[in-house]
Image (tube, rainbow, N blue to C red; front, side):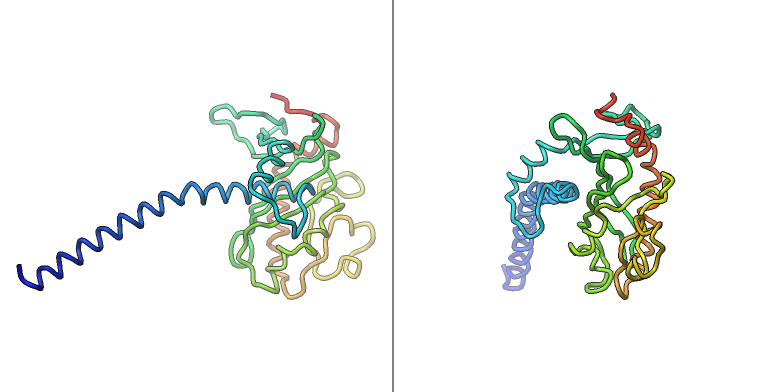
Length: 236
Protein backbone atom coordinates (compact mmCIF):
# COMPACT_ATOMS: atom_id res chain seq x y z
CA UNK A 1 0.00 0.00 0.00
CA UNK A 2 1.48 3.36 -1.00
CA UNK A 3 2.15 6.12 1.52
CA UNK A 4 -0.47 8.36 -0.13
CA UNK A 5 -3.15 5.69 0.18
CA UNK A 6 -2.23 5.07 3.83
CA UNK A 7 -2.52 8.81 4.54
CA UNK A 8 -5.93 9.01 2.91
CA UNK A 9 -7.17 5.91 4.75
CA UNK A 10 -5.88 7.27 8.06
CA UNK A 11 -7.64 10.60 7.47
CA UNK A 12 -10.92 8.85 6.64
CA UNK A 13 -10.75 6.63 9.73
CA UNK A 14 -9.81 9.61 11.93
CA UNK A 15 -12.75 11.66 10.63
CA UNK A 16 -15.09 8.73 11.24
CA UNK A 17 -13.88 8.26 14.82
CA UNK A 18 -14.13 11.98 15.58
CA UNK A 19 -17.67 12.06 14.15
CA UNK A 20 -18.66 9.16 16.39
CA UNK A 21 -17.17 10.87 19.45
CA UNK A 22 -18.91 14.19 18.69
CA UNK A 23 -22.23 12.43 18.15
CA UNK A 24 -21.88 10.53 21.39
CA UNK A 25 -20.95 13.70 23.28
CA UNK A 26 -23.87 15.63 21.83
CA UNK A 27 -26.33 12.85 22.67
CA UNK A 28 -24.94 12.48 26.16
CA UNK A 29 -25.17 16.22 26.89
CA UNK A 30 -28.61 16.71 25.36
CA UNK A 31 -30.54 15.52 28.40
CA UNK A 32 -28.39 17.70 30.67
CA UNK A 33 -28.96 20.73 28.43
CA UNK A 34 -32.71 20.13 28.41
CA UNK A 35 -32.73 19.91 32.21
CA UNK A 36 -30.76 23.16 32.49
CA UNK A 37 -33.30 24.89 30.24
CA UNK A 38 -36.13 23.52 32.38
CA UNK A 39 -34.46 24.64 35.61
CA UNK A 40 -33.91 28.12 34.21
CA UNK A 41 -37.57 28.32 33.22
CA UNK A 42 -38.69 27.22 36.68
CA UNK A 43 -36.31 29.67 38.36
CA UNK A 44 -37.73 32.60 36.38
CA UNK A 45 -41.33 31.63 37.14
CA UNK A 46 -40.48 31.39 40.83
CA UNK A 47 -38.71 34.75 40.66
CA UNK A 48 -41.77 36.42 39.15
CA UNK A 49 -43.76 35.68 42.32
CA UNK A 50 -40.91 36.45 44.72
CA UNK A 51 -40.01 32.89 45.65
CA UNK A 52 -36.34 33.33 44.71
CA UNK A 53 -34.04 36.24 45.48
CA UNK A 54 -31.83 38.14 43.06
CA UNK A 55 -28.15 37.26 43.48
CA UNK A 56 -28.76 34.24 45.67
CA UNK A 57 -27.57 30.90 44.34
CA UNK A 58 -29.89 27.91 44.31
CA UNK A 59 -29.15 24.31 43.47
CA UNK A 60 -31.16 22.65 40.72
CA UNK A 61 -32.72 20.36 43.33
CA UNK A 62 -33.84 23.33 45.43
CA UNK A 63 -35.42 25.05 42.43
CA UNK A 64 -37.26 21.86 41.45
CA UNK A 65 -38.54 21.40 45.00
CA UNK A 66 -39.73 25.03 45.30
CA UNK A 67 -41.41 24.79 41.93
CA UNK A 68 -43.12 21.50 42.71
CA UNK A 69 -44.42 22.84 46.04
CA UNK A 70 -45.73 26.17 44.76
CA UNK A 71 -46.42 26.18 41.01
CA UNK A 72 -49.08 24.43 38.93
CA UNK A 73 -48.72 24.25 35.14
CA UNK A 74 -52.17 24.52 33.59
CA UNK A 75 -54.12 25.96 30.66
CA UNK A 76 -56.74 28.63 30.08
CA UNK A 77 -59.50 28.23 27.49
CA UNK A 78 -60.96 31.14 25.45
CA UNK A 79 -63.61 31.81 28.12
CA UNK A 80 -60.95 32.22 30.81
CA UNK A 81 -61.58 28.90 32.52
CA UNK A 82 -58.46 27.28 33.91
CA UNK A 83 -58.21 23.64 32.93
CA UNK A 84 -55.82 20.83 33.75
CA UNK A 85 -55.71 19.25 30.32
CA UNK A 86 -56.99 20.65 27.00
CA UNK A 87 -59.25 18.63 24.79
CA UNK A 88 -58.14 17.72 21.30
CA UNK A 89 -58.13 20.77 19.00
CA UNK A 90 -59.11 23.15 21.81
CA UNK A 91 -57.52 26.61 21.63
CA UNK A 92 -55.79 27.16 24.97
CA UNK A 93 -53.13 29.35 26.57
CA UNK A 94 -50.44 28.15 29.01
CA UNK A 95 -50.78 29.57 32.51
CA UNK A 96 -48.95 29.00 35.77
CA UNK A 97 -50.60 29.30 39.17
CA UNK A 98 -48.78 30.16 42.37
CA UNK A 99 -50.70 28.17 44.97
CA UNK A 100 -50.07 28.29 48.71
CA UNK A 101 -52.16 26.54 51.35
CA UNK A 102 -54.52 25.40 48.58
CA UNK A 103 -55.26 29.00 47.62
CA UNK A 104 -54.24 30.78 44.40
CA UNK A 105 -51.96 33.70 45.27
CA UNK A 106 -51.07 34.78 41.72
CA UNK A 107 -51.11 33.64 38.12
CA UNK A 108 -48.19 33.87 35.73
CA UNK A 109 -48.33 34.38 31.97
CA UNK A 110 -45.42 33.80 29.58
CA UNK A 111 -44.19 36.86 27.70
CA UNK A 112 -43.00 36.43 24.12
CA UNK A 113 -42.65 39.88 22.61
CA UNK A 114 -40.87 41.47 19.71
CA UNK A 115 -37.79 43.44 20.68
CA UNK A 116 -35.48 45.72 18.73
CA UNK A 117 -33.13 42.90 17.65
CA UNK A 118 -35.06 39.73 18.45
CA UNK A 119 -37.64 38.16 20.73
CA UNK A 120 -37.97 39.11 24.39
CA UNK A 121 -38.96 36.14 26.56
CA UNK A 122 -40.05 36.32 30.17
CA UNK A 123 -42.88 35.93 32.67
CA UNK A 124 -45.37 38.39 34.14
CA UNK A 125 -47.11 37.55 37.42
CA UNK A 126 -50.45 39.06 38.39
CA UNK A 127 -52.00 38.92 41.84
CA UNK A 128 -55.28 37.09 42.44
CA UNK A 129 -57.17 40.40 42.16
CA UNK A 130 -56.64 40.12 38.38
CA UNK A 131 -55.31 43.68 38.22
CA UNK A 132 -52.05 44.13 40.13
CA UNK A 133 -48.67 43.00 38.82
CA UNK A 134 -46.63 41.13 41.41
CA UNK A 135 -43.50 40.49 39.34
CA UNK A 136 -41.79 40.51 35.96
CA UNK A 137 -38.76 38.62 34.69
CA UNK A 138 -36.84 38.42 31.42
CA UNK A 139 -34.76 35.33 30.73
CA UNK A 140 -33.84 35.75 27.07
CA UNK A 141 -33.40 38.71 24.74
CA UNK A 142 -31.12 40.18 22.06
CA UNK A 143 -31.28 43.84 23.11
CA UNK A 144 -28.20 46.08 23.18
CA UNK A 145 -26.16 45.78 26.41
CA UNK A 146 -26.33 48.96 28.48
CA UNK A 147 -29.40 50.17 26.58
CA UNK A 148 -32.35 47.90 25.80
CA UNK A 149 -30.46 45.10 27.53
CA UNK A 150 -31.34 46.78 30.83
CA UNK A 151 -34.69 44.97 30.68
CA UNK A 152 -32.95 42.01 32.29
CA UNK A 153 -31.78 44.08 35.26
CA UNK A 154 -33.45 44.01 38.66
CA UNK A 155 -33.89 47.81 38.83
CA UNK A 156 -36.08 47.74 35.72
CA UNK A 157 -38.07 44.62 36.54
CA UNK A 158 -38.93 45.67 40.10
CA UNK A 159 -40.67 48.79 38.70
CA UNK A 160 -43.51 46.53 37.55
CA UNK A 161 -44.40 45.39 41.07
CA UNK A 162 -47.61 47.03 42.26
CA UNK A 163 -48.52 48.47 38.85
CA UNK A 164 -51.99 47.85 37.40
CA UNK A 165 -53.23 46.45 34.09
CA UNK A 166 -56.58 48.24 34.55
CA UNK A 167 -57.36 51.96 34.83
CA UNK A 168 -59.25 53.75 37.60
CA UNK A 169 -62.56 52.58 36.10
CA UNK A 170 -61.45 48.94 36.15
CA UNK A 171 -61.04 48.78 32.36
CA UNK A 172 -58.17 46.83 30.82
CA UNK A 173 -55.36 49.08 29.57
CA UNK A 174 -52.34 46.75 29.98
CA UNK A 175 -48.98 47.98 31.29
CA UNK A 176 -46.75 50.37 29.33
CA UNK A 177 -43.17 51.58 29.42
CA UNK A 178 -42.87 55.36 29.56
CA UNK A 179 -40.40 57.45 27.59
CA UNK A 180 -38.44 58.47 30.67
CA UNK A 181 -39.58 58.76 34.28
CA UNK A 182 -43.28 58.12 34.82
CA UNK A 183 -43.62 61.02 37.26
CA UNK A 184 -42.22 63.43 34.68
CA UNK A 185 -44.28 62.21 31.73
CA UNK A 186 -47.75 61.26 32.90
CA UNK A 187 -50.58 62.64 35.03
CA UNK A 188 -51.11 61.07 38.43
CA UNK A 189 -54.20 59.17 37.29
CA UNK A 190 -52.24 57.21 34.65
CA UNK A 191 -48.98 56.59 36.47
CA UNK A 192 -50.17 53.29 37.93
CA UNK A 193 -50.29 51.80 34.40
CA UNK A 194 -46.73 52.77 33.44
CA UNK A 195 -43.16 51.94 34.44
CA UNK A 196 -40.07 54.08 34.01
CA UNK A 197 -38.44 53.75 30.61
CA UNK A 198 -34.79 53.07 29.82
CA UNK A 199 -32.69 55.98 28.61
CA UNK A 200 -31.62 55.45 24.99
CA UNK A 201 -33.89 52.41 24.52
CA UNK A 202 -37.14 53.94 23.31
CA UNK A 203 -37.75 51.29 20.65
CA UNK A 204 -37.19 48.41 23.07
CA UNK A 205 -39.78 49.96 25.36
CA UNK A 206 -42.17 50.52 22.47
CA UNK A 207 -41.98 46.94 21.22
CA UNK A 208 -42.19 45.40 24.70
CA UNK A 209 -45.20 47.59 25.52
CA UNK A 210 -46.98 46.46 22.36
CA UNK A 211 -46.10 42.82 22.97
CA UNK A 212 -47.34 42.80 26.55
CA UNK A 213 -50.57 44.55 25.56
CA UNK A 214 -51.27 41.88 22.93
CA UNK A 215 -50.46 39.02 25.30
CA UNK A 216 -52.41 40.40 28.26
CA UNK A 217 -55.40 41.03 26.00
CA UNK A 218 -55.44 37.32 25.17
CA UNK A 219 -55.39 36.50 28.90
CA UNK A 220 -58.02 39.11 29.74
CA UNK A 221 -60.84 36.51 30.08
CA UNK A 222 -58.77 34.89 32.86
CA UNK A 223 -58.11 38.24 34.51
CA UNK A 224 -61.82 39.11 34.43
CA UNK A 225 -62.65 35.87 36.24
CA UNK A 226 -60.13 36.71 38.94
CA UNK A 227 -61.50 40.24 39.28
CA UNK A 228 -64.97 38.79 39.75
CA UNK A 229 -63.63 36.30 42.32
CA UNK A 230 -64.65 33.41 40.10
CA UNK A 231 -61.29 31.61 40.21
CA UNK A 232 -59.97 30.08 43.40
CA UNK A 233 -59.03 26.69 42.00
CA UNK A 234 -58.77 24.85 38.72
CA UNK A 235 -62.16 24.38 37.15
CA UNK A 236 -61.76 21.21 35.14
